[in-house]
Image (cartoon, rainbow, N blue to C red; front, side):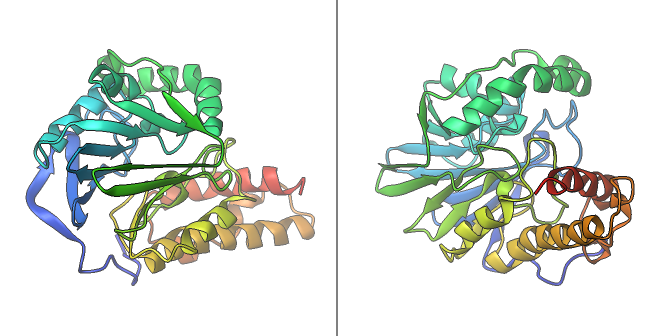
Length: 305
């Protein structure tokens, strides 16, 4: 596989030997902050729907988990990894959006006593797609889905929510729809670190679905960029720099919008959409399987702009 020249910065390092449960890789980002990096492949019984990147912040008064895992057993696998990093209990879990791995592990963490936080728009999306997501996971995970049930956030907010724990400030911001309608990012100002959920993908191509907003997504990315973070923990891929995040997410989105916009202006149809030139991004994992579908989804949305 070819890699983009903007590789992740050297100041972010992997903890030696920390490739743990269900292929979850622990990556130290900065003091007290880690990315837990899952597979980039499809959901499977082996990865327990943890095919995404999660975040962990340790404080003196407990830990905060960014995204709970894609199933009850996926959440258990995350818990196993977390116990190898900190002895602090997880007291807050933040759902960054409406995809399954952003919320279907909620019930496990609530059973351990954690408080779950999400945007109003994310919970609305979760409720709307819960049945579809659970039935889809049943076919992909089989018996590994056992124990998983829909459970929603204890605290919700419309646009912004902030709290402090053990001297660490967490700012949760819903700047608009991106991969899903309720996507948020979590900003730690003192650590200059942002957890983006599915607003940012690196190393693999992002997915544009019926629930996505090809129109709002670039502006939501720019809201993150406006923070000028030193560390970006994406929803998929390793923690990295803002430049790398821009190259793999923002530039992909703007290229797709430009090429589909030209196709529409020239009278092309949705059947032509997969032929638009996205080759500048063919270094990204899952490009062959997703690029054409992304183009058709973008066409469906943009033809009515």
